[in-house]
Amino acid sequence: EQNVSIILMLTSEQEEGQPKCHRYFPPDDQQGGHVQFEQYRITLKFVAQNSVTTRCFSLRHIPSNQVREITHLQYSEWPDHGIPEDPQPFLDFVGTVHSLRQQYHSGVPVLVHCSAGVGRSGVFVLMDFLMAKVDCGDEIDIAKSLQLLRDQRMNLVQMVGQYKFLYSAIVHYIKRARLI
Image 1 (cartoon, rainbow, N blue to C red):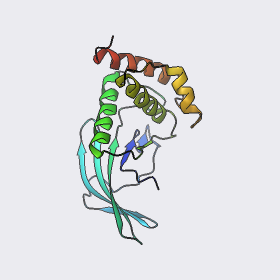
Image 2 (cartoon, rainbow, N blue to C red):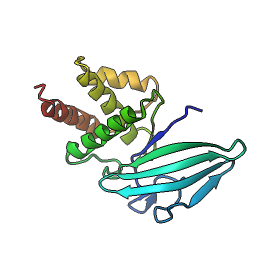
Image 3 (cartoon, helix red, strand yellow):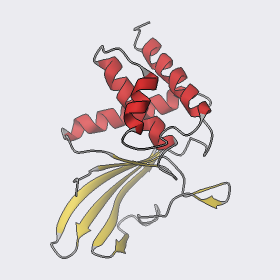
Image 4 (cartoon, rainbow, N blue to C red):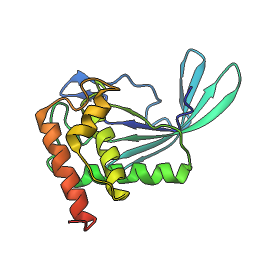
């Protein structure tokens, strides 16, 4: 519907023995393998595992035979109901996503998900928004920005710790950019 070409998965499939996300793509050890959901077939073309797992999929709509390439980035260094100890790896991940979006030269939205769709996803979306404002030289107001996003998706940024992490991470980003 939105012609998404980048999917961000901010969770592992299981955390602490609990399922967090249904697997909607082929296993990483089955390059060329596929899974099918109704009229769609997802084929795994490539996997690279570093601090972020990068997968490339081919998404085929079977009735029309239309194919779209999807880049899937999985960031699993964020504990459920917790926060990362160091903001830098997360900031690097957000930077990777920025670079990928520029590479695609596309105004197409990025699909972001975690387990519930509000905690880690909310932090990512807000951080992406704040970093873009900083990069443009605009003033930032984290509370106001969060309220703006919550008008579209209730409960974004679930916990006080995540909110504090946003402050810490944006200060870290601004310092690294030598703006303060």
